[in-house]
Length: 322
Image (cartoon, rainbow, N blue to C red; front, side, top):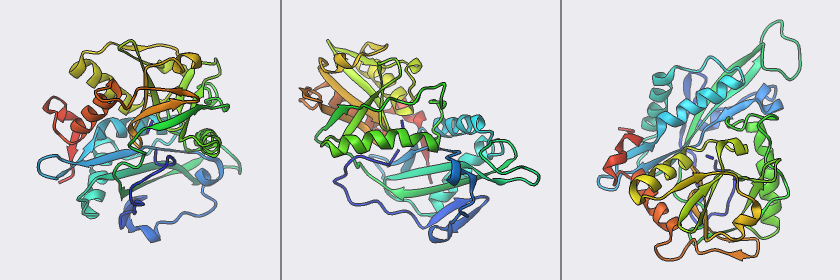
C-alpha cells in the first residue's frame, strides 16, 4: 500500500513543489483550488496513487520507481468509479514527468496523482452517485526522503477491521476508504504504538494502515494472499521479486492468524510511503527484525539499492525524469 498520511517522522517536514497539474494545466500550488461542491470532497469518490522518485546512486539523476505499474493501477482504480476520461497511458506518464521537470526536481521526491469525481452534469439529479458526474485529475509532488522511524516500529493489532472487498473494492486506492485506516492509526498512536495491523472480517491478518504485512518464520517469508482483503501493493510485489531472485527465499502467500504474528521471528511492513519498515514489537512480543543480517534489514537494503539503480537486473523499474 502506498500513502503519506501517517507514521512518525524524524526527517525535516516535506515541502510541496511550486507547480501542480490540475485539469489540463500547470498552476502554482497556492492557486490549485477546488469548490466545496466537488463530488469527491463530499462523498470520497476519488482514487489516488503514491509514487516515489529516488536519486540514482552514481550520478544523482532522479528516477521514478515503478511509474508504469503505479499509473496502470491508478487507471484500474479510476475505472471502478467510472472515472473513464483520464489521459491515455503514455500521456499520463508524460504529464507526470513534465510536472517534475517543471518543478526542477533534484532530490528524492513523492508524487501524488488523484483522479476524482468533479461536478454533476446537466440533467443529473443531486446526490451521491458515479454516473452523471464529470471527472478531474490533479498531480502534485513534494520533496521526501524516509519519514518512518529507521530503528524499527511497534505495532498493535487493531480493533478496527479492514474494510471488506465486498463493501469497498480493496484493490483500488479509493480516498473515502482511508477513514478505515485513519481510525486504526489514531487508536494505535494514542495507545503508544507507531502503527496498527488490521484483521479482515474472517479474523485473519490483512494489512497495516497504509502498508502490506510480511512475517518471517523459520527462514520463510509469509504474507497474506490477495484474497485477504488487501491492496495488491507494488512494493509488496517488489519485495517478493527481490526475495526470490536475490536471496532465494521461499515466499508463501497464505492466511495468517494474529497469534502467528505474536510468535513470528521477524515482521516488516511494505508500501511506497513507508518503504520497508521493520517491526520490532507487536503488542508485547519482541521480534528480531532489526538484528544484524536479519531478513527484514537485508530486504530493506536490497529495496533501496533497486530504487537507486544499484541492481542492474531491476533497472526496468526505473523511469528517468530527465
